[in-house]
Image (tube, rainbow, N blue to C red; front, side):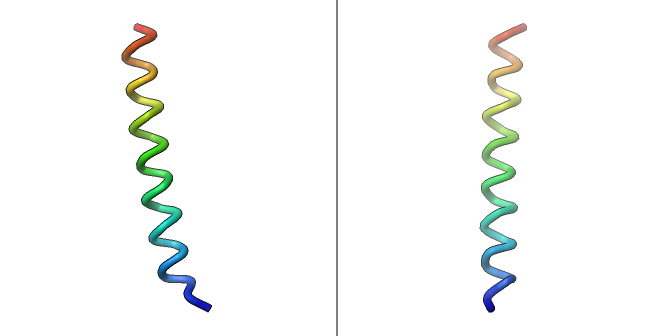
Length: 29
């Protein structure tokens, strides 16, 4: 199993989601 690739991909997705969430918080404030 390519756990390294999937782990890296999930980490990248998590980073993108965090960035979007932070942008939304900025818009709310």
